[in-house]
View 1 (tube, rainbow, N blue to C red):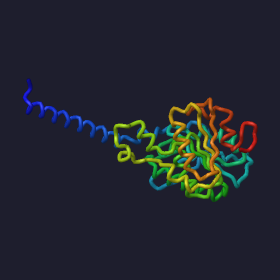
View 2 (cartoon, rainbow, N blue to C red):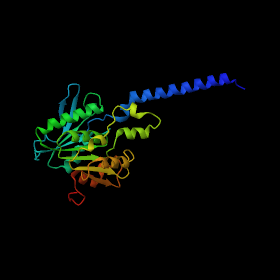
View 3 (cartoon, rainbow, N blue to C red):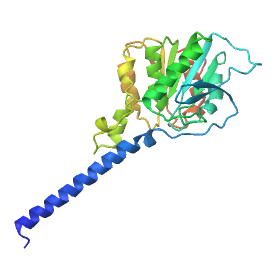
View 4 (cartoon, rainbow, N blue to C red):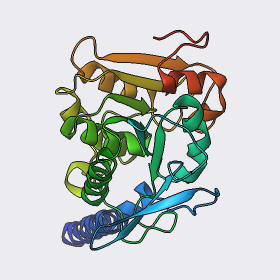
Length: 270
């Protein structure tokens, strides 16, 4: 039989080891957290780009506005902020069909698509604000579209700038909430730096807003999108669910372009 003093010592050593392992995992999560949020992609589509010089980074923006043969309404523009692994140059075609008379500007986040710098919530939101200020000089009527990760950026732009319309595709209520669900054993509130708490901003939004959800979304739960929709002032949000789509196939649905444009599939305004 093991003496109580030796057993107590063994339990103390074991508890200390477990605590140290737990703290080590917390430290690893804290240091590597942005690798779970941002997955830089290459720029693959043959689109023109403009460059925002941000001092500590050069941010590339894919656009259709440089096409000299293109005839469009010079008053209107669309700013697009994509998902965490998205090559936004590939979104230009879909956006062009949804907004045929507008100039499209799709921002490649820092370290994405040839942009330099390191992504963070503060940096990407600041870059998005700078893009708005650059574009509004030429196009006074601006719609903002944010998909998945980019919905948290789009919301903050719309809450601070005079936008005409907001479209949120598979948005979350808060990235912190999603992280807490995935890492239940860890104090994510204290560990997570980029929280993207969209619910904090939407209460002061009064521009027409469309939320587009995928019926089979396994990345952003529909419950999270609906919680965000419920945080808007009454009458501001139209929620469109595309039942057959999942998080990544959503843009392949014919209903997606109509939802972006604010129409139903018959072409009527929602």
